[in-house]
Structure formats: structure tokens, C-alpha cells
Length: 141
Image 1 (cartoon, rainbow, N blue to C red):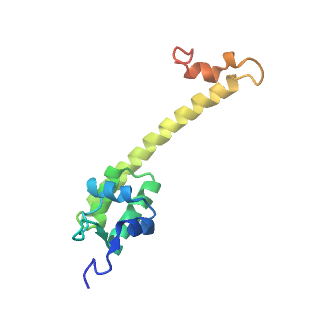
Image 2: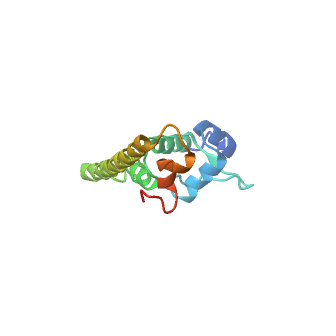
Image 3: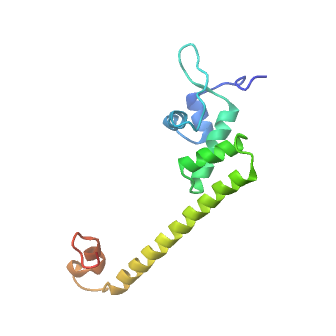
């Protein structure tokens, strides 16, 4: 039995993977999904393995992985990266990215918290420190 024995048309494959048809083409164009075989009329045909791969990509995205990072994860899943050091390096890079994002979010939280405390509950919206800080030329630039 070949991989494409139970070939699935694009629309049905997209539905099964929880994406739209354009997403399948986008993943193919960006090297995340191998180009599927086509019918004589040029229609793409997907396998269950392709659908599982799309689900893997979507799951990785939901965990915050970028498409570049997902390519590395797919190389691991495909057996192209087999050394523990390579796998560990991908994980370390993601941790470093997460740590940087946490620092940025903590700074943002601090600034926004300070602005909320400055904001008076009553009064003119014209004097709102939150709006002023977001405006060009605001006093908290």
C-alpha cells in the first residue's frame, strides 16, 4: 500500500487538518509540506501523513513556535537531526526566545501598571495619562 493509496482532495484534507486550502498551499510554498502528487487535471492529492504533518505544524504554532522553528522541529521529526546536541540546541534557542519575551512583557506590565495608577477615575479624557503616553509627543515617550 503506497502512501497516497487513500488520496484526499485539497478541500477535504484542509477540513481534516483544521485549516483552509490556502494554508496547505502556504505550507507547501514555504517548505513545511512536501508538494503532493497531482491528478491529471492538476488537483493536489494529500495523504493521511500530510494531514498529520499539518496538525503537527498547527500544534507547534499554538505553542508559540515560529515557522522557522517549526522547520527545525520537522527536521527532527523527519529524522534529519538525530544528535541529541542538535535537538537540545533547538530547545535552548526557544527557551532563550521565551525568556526574552517574558522580560519584554514584564517591562510592558510595569509601564502599563504605572499608567493605570496615574489615570484618574474621573475627569476629562483629554488628560488621561494612558492616551497621552500613546500619543505622538506624549509625556511618557
